Amino acid sequence: MVPEVDAVTGAVARLVGTHAGDVRDVGAYAVLQGLLDGTPAAVGVMSPTMRYLYVNPALARMNGLPAEVHLGRTIGEVLPDLDAKEDVLRAVLRDGVPREATSSGTTHAGPPGRRWWHGAYHRLEHEGEVVGLAAVLLEVSESRRTQLELDAARRRLAVLDAAATRVGTTLDLVETCEELAELFVAELSDVATVDVFAVEGANGAPHQPLDMVRMWRAALSHRPGMSEQAAILRQPGENVDYQQGSMVPRALSERSPVVVNRAADEEMARQVSSPDRLAVFRSVGLHSVVALPLVARGSAIGMVTMSRHGAADEFSPEDVILARDLARRGAISVDNARRYAHEHDIALALQHALLAAPDAPHPDIELASRYRPAGSSVEVGGDWYDAVALSGGRTLLAVGDVMGHGVQAAVEMSQFRALLRVQARSDLEPHEILAAVDRTSTKAGIERVASCLLVLVDPATDTVTFASAGHLPPLLVGPGDAAELVDVPVGPPLGTGFGGYGSVRRRSDPDRVLVMYTDGLVERRGEDIGESLQRLTRVGLTAETPLVRLVDTVIARMITDKPEDDIAVLAARRRPSAPDRT
Image (cartoon, rainbow, N blue to C red; front, side):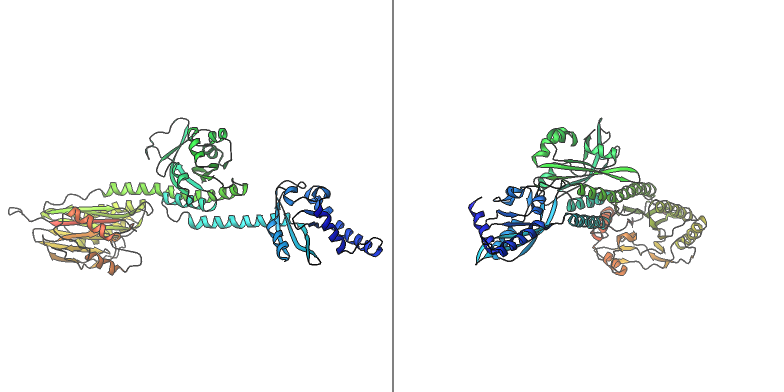
């Protein structure tokens, strides 16, 4: 036995008052010995230098080693895989304040896997001398595992709740994928990518290579300071080809996560997108990857791939379970965005096909027009403009907006436009044309209503006649930067069946430009419409500007951010009549 063991054993003997021939003291020591040996709590005594002096049978069984093997050795020498919180023990020896701590790790006994113990520690003293440290430990593995499971469940619920509020905030496919990748990085990984299936003939991918699975990278996210790890990957907007048999095709085929944790180079080369990229991945410390299929409504629509690098832990089973649940939630949002994008593209193509350019007016009228959709995150509206050449040198200009968005709005826009063209050739006044279209559209069963502004330009009489069905007033731009809104009587929208339209007539002025528009040009959330219209009069337009440039200028100056609605603008200017023109 080492000298310090003898010294402290002698001190403990003195503490219990053991003297040769003293029957009472020997009996007291035997009672104390029986108490320590018989208690189910693990009890140990350590020297001031943190070496075992005494280990009761319960502690010996817990550690899986005989008591005598402990004596004279440190905790680390006896149990190298145990986190014993030795800093707490040293603090107790230093200041004498009792403390409690929970240690964890593995011993030489018991079931495999991590276990937990809760210990109480106090300093032993004799005649003012620190003689050791006493420890009483109880195993709390069961309650600790239960607590960890509860904590994991709470974390899963918190992350899934975050997915519900942070992913799918728009119907834009790229933004939705970016939100999903950012959430994976925030909760689980160093780097995350989101890929969706490439569209035939799109994104520079007319054909899929043989023996490869081609996807389109929609998003990439990484932790701060990991730009080098992210830079080696295919960037958003590029195609990514995965070798057959690698983890991404497997995950898509099996519809379940595929995990590669700290695999050897040979195995990792089979799992990544291409074997020749393994060296690049290893150069930035990549060691663990998880591929998670995005499956919605029974179909695989994409893939989330997350990775860990450097000193980060490998992915645990709990990480994979959380990631799988997160991918399931995210897949619904991604699929909604994909479906919306498909419908949006159809509606936009339909609207462009139906809208095209306005008909050619009479030679007396110069026109310029622009249609600007709100963007992929907002549904296509039913905005339109038109010009119809009538008898007697007259030209009817029209701008309208069908209520609502989507394919149906675009279809009904074409119906209103066709009705206007038919009625315009009946030599009716603008307010009479609106009344006829209102009656006809109601009888025809067109479900949506539409606002419309008509302007009849008559060079023969030097007049311009205005009529409105629930539409915003036109703008007259004069020389310099003079601009005014025309006060037009406003009737109900078309399709209501109420009728009641009026007209206002003004002299035509070749020195002025007429600007007609839909509400997407001026309306802003949180801004009064009157303020919006006054802002339009102050944008600094001039009638001398070429019409195309004037239209582009008014849109650029009125729309400083992503537009909230579709915009249609039609600008017209009278050309001076030739002397022999009727």
